[in-house]
Length: 334
Image (tube, rainbow, N blue to C red; front, side, top):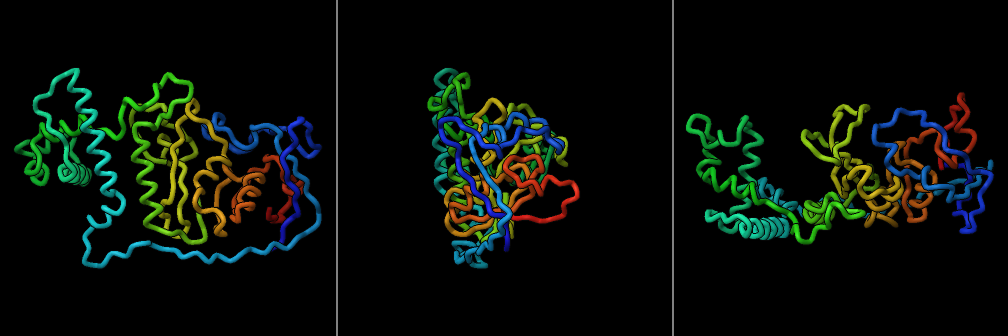
């Protein structure tokens, strides 16, 4: 593989700039509505100095020698529940039970609820099973699952309607007393689900070793300040979720949720580098689209023994002049 030779370094703290730096150009591609609020590498300021030369260098891509595939092999005699338990481990079940009981106690102090009894792991698993059954047999009103005409026995025979709704009412994943007020300068908008997200990510990574190639919205209806409108997507409204996946089978290794312009702001390089944590220095190849691709990011990955491949917007900074020629059909690697 051949590439143009580059020299990239950060500009000294004295504020001097390079002739190679260029001004921000107007975006040539149609952006999603909220992209302008997302900090990308082009908006952080002229903090890099990069020089291209016409000297061609041969790049030797190191071999990938890591084991890949599931870390546990379940026999054919195992049930679907065995696979479910790999992701929703005892730790997660205990977390939900503990936080639900804490929240119920907090609410009962203000408004007594004599019918409430603490939620136990076995009951929670049955409750989750009922939710899955409801997803497969949808009804316009949740109370219809206990109606004599429309009831679903697998649910109605396991829970009374009041007990099921009571668990739904108090279900919690984090202690409200530990969550920073939303009026604070930089609150975590995902604080109420963050403990579950962290445990799920741990399980995703523990159960699977990815192959060499890694790659980077969820449908939603309702009120949320994190919901995004993306007119270029098939699903117009939804959460914007960053994911790191095995490119071969789309297995999710890591993920994060964009919390909106008023949430924690991250540049695109930071998003990629954080998702890649734990997979550096193994000669992986990260494949991405032009929203993330930039020369500084590729150099940062390369310095961690990680390769990258992706389309790039022609108005990105630090690109060689050849890529700005309208009739140029030359394919270059950086």
